[in-house]
Length: 218
Image (cartoon, rainbow, N blue to C red; front, side, top):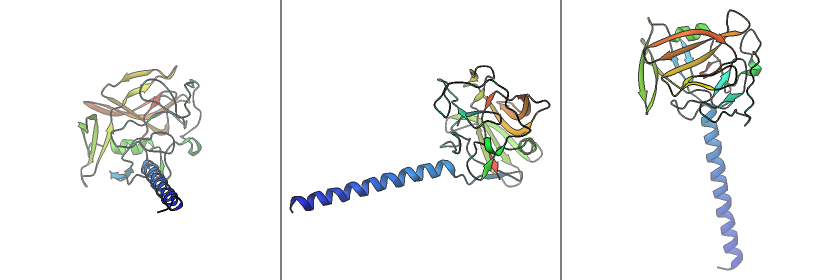
């Protein structure tokens, strides 16, 4: 076999290898933007938290990123503090708006931030069982539809990034905090859901805090 034939064969091998890498990369990205979801008490929930804007966390147990209410910039759930734009400049001003606007929604396509009534449907004791559990080594709350048996796991990421400077509060603790798209009583607050090892409920708090996001189908 002459040198030209050898070089051509090597070129084809390299091209095929590059194509395979491209396919794998595309599949990995698709996996981060697609979620079949699960229906709990009539609402279809994503099975994973939102990670960087427009993507889901790789696994149901992964924390994803923290978000301030009505803002599309994600923040790390561990130190060092860095956002989805690779910046560290925390915005301590109060986000405006009467709801979480579509333009600021970090949810992947086909998904959105849940409303407070949708969160309350997940917390409905008559229709949904809740149990503190460990899934693949990660602690969190498992919600199970009493009628269908469908279940949903939300990881206990730790509670929050503080409103003033973005510092972590109760990081690594057995707490979870998740935003809704519903505004609170005043212009400074919004509603969300919390849980820990023996309790679940909904809250209203300052919009500048950074909490987790779990989406519902549009």
